Length: 311
Length: 311
Image (spheres, each protein chain N blue to C red):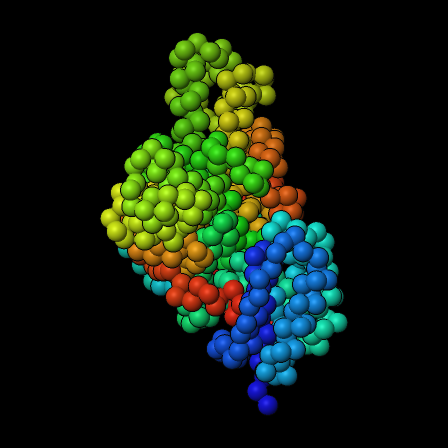
């Protein structure tokens, strides 16, 4: 019998489940929406319900869960998840009642990094950083071919390196974190302001004048149609991330940086100013040795990475 | 017979040599000045001369060299050392002719980190960052109990993370690197300007009015005598380093950060604002898990670390 792994990507707006071969290939997958805050019990029941309908459920020999939040991997406890509205939830213990295989719980950005390491980098490098660009900016570190968690499992929080130390207030309690200048909301807000000042007819048209509908996807469309506001927003976002990445490259000297998440769907619009800035700012040898790419498996890395963590 | 290790700390102004037991204890040591630029051949000859006068030279079974500069560890080549005025020097090959034991060449900040890991941390933690604060700001990373070198051996260049991205020009070619705001020269220059504006009688007195003589040591003396200029310089330096360390702690989540080098001799003057800033800015769990200390073995970590790299 084939031995497969169950991956669960547990986010604030939706839950993905996949049964994955040991090489990372998805055998079967499904997803269902999740409206938060939601009781852990409800979610565990939903997982049980959906798992029972999966054809290959009988083949799983291990399960991994990536949770948006601060996770105590050793004890399988979700210490704090603002997105899910959870505090000190013994998720591993709860899941054990319904999944009779070894279970590992980790942070979702760690799971995504592990997934990107296998799917995008094909495990061909030793040291890699994966950065998830979405509502927030998260990250995970692969060091010497292993997921690096650090002293408290917090490692990889690249979104909370200061870009402008005395700048904008961040949710984390500090000021000027790069997350505040790169998160989806900030980019949309920049565009809204420009549209309100009549600076972008293209964005206005793409959203039928409904400024609430401005998303990174809309900004990418607008930029690809030559919209100057959108082009400038992506350029500036790339420069800012490039400044942070230059420091990360000098400090950590990775072979690869993989960008993932909704905001990374801007692809070359973001990548070009990042690469330019890194070339200008980082030390030459580590900059040349570091491949900066955008994940080609954006939808899969979180759930596949979670599954492969259980391998 | 005892098996010991030779450590060589090869800097721009002096060279230290020590014969070290496998536990890091120094058996015998000596140092000699070095005026640069100097031919690699001359230095190798000097090392041979001084080594022949060391009583325990016969006990060494391995040798490690820490060099201020960019080092290709694999091939034992000093790719570039501005301090020594060297470019592509095959140091390992040259030393092989005079030292008949296995030799390892590494960057001096890496050697210092390895020394701090053994002497200060007693190898009791898994993940540690050592930061050398001197003319420049360097660093080394211990990851999972091993020296982490990264893709090109550059890892640990914490001095070249941006503090103020569009700020002061840095020697590395970028702008606003934290090194520019923490290096010994910058601190002295800040004090000089204040003294010239008549703001510090204490510093003026301590240097007999010779502003060229303002060093971090003088600034420490002045601050300890209550000099407001010196106190403010140390406070600001600590805050700035604290901003960078908060980001490093969020990103790397180490159990310990060890500060070393001449500028760290300010001890509590620097440490207090660093800790305060880190507490304010970093995530709570990793900040609490990270012990920030100043090395108690400042003079030894470079040469002992080099020796222990050969172990």
